[in-house]
Length: 318
Image 1 (cartoon, rainbow, N blue to C red):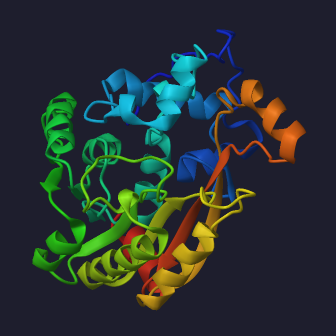
Image 2 (tube, helix red, strand yellow):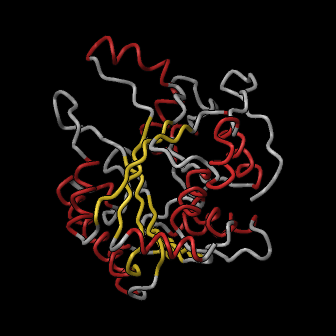
């Protein structure tokens, strides 16, 4: 996607300096963004590129029952809806992150498998970049919203293939050893509840959630070609039943279940996200309990064979 960047602004409407290229120009030229372990999504370059995707017409909130989410109700009660980074209290996948992961880990015209599709972002970005995308989501209304979003795609872009259903069932029907890149962002257990469907893993007890999550990863693994990569975006979550709000170690559990499924844990990125309403919320939680304000996520990278062979496949097709 090559367009002229628009000027990004911060939450106060002030222009943000474009921190693109300069000293690392060759890295931007060769890789879109330097392949370092920290991805800064609040720098001017990133926000400008993200704005291009938004200008395309991506609206990933469509199809989400945002009013039913605790985060939405909190943000609305504080009068914070509309602040950059809050997204009315729900998490929206970053299109620049999707663009980077596809560019870095997928052969040209490769096929991407996403077992927790959710909103339209990952499918729209994949198609607009020329990749074939298959995403699975439990909710009919979400898939219908995604298909409506697909109308913004360029005429020659491959249309995303969104499938309605339980990934643990649908994956059994997909072709084995077929896909080139596994990429997704699973539910963070009960951090956000996406529906009232008992088959939705965000409604399950944590142990059952992990059990089904591992089954889905194992079945996804069977659908992947040898010597290919997988990237999952995750973050730590707190145990709501704990009297002190301790972490569940969701990142560690995700690594374990991938390795139990046959993958090798290979790389990790840290995504530095917008602080959004965090400056308003942080005072009380820090003063009361020394609970840090979290504005990062983890991208866990796995490989199911030889990463050198996998890289040659990616480079050889570009």
